[in-house]
Length: 213
Image 1 (tube, rainbow, N blue to C red):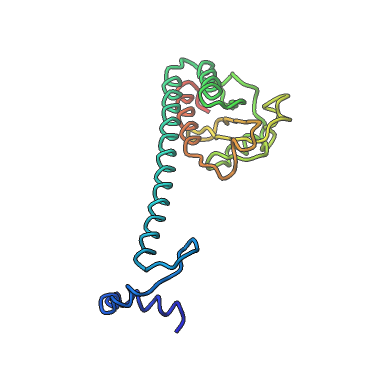
Image 2: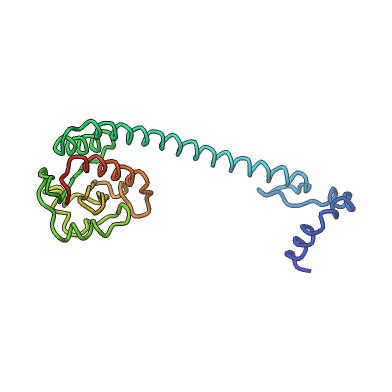
């Protein structure tokens, strides 16, 4: 009989431990950290303690993530209020730039709009428009996409991570580009939930001021 067979038998016949309680009490097994042998009951207690420690660590991580999410949610809320209060596209653009730099500590922020009523930025190229229209969700990574490196001027040579957020109504009408000298600020595997929400809020507020495409 193989060890797996023994384990399977004991799982399928828990009554074994009642019928042979004296055997279970007499069985001694190695201590998990070396040294003396211990009983099965002692080993079970050690296992439960280890599981309790693991659960405590996971709980601590969940609490930390929750606190971090609360902070980010508050920042998104402040951004939303400021965007709603903006009276025109120029003021709204200023809010986006100021809040993302100051509240979210994003060092490089560029807003590009290609709408008849958006006369606040240099026009976006066809490559940029095509790239933005093809985004199903925010894109994060180490490379500047399309021809967007030019957005950041002389700082472009120092930048190591980027985030791109499409701005949409019925169609894509803009792109919010974020960048950092920190390679780990925007990475491909990062969650984009808050970036998505920021893009949706900015787009909704912009559409109140822009002329129909």
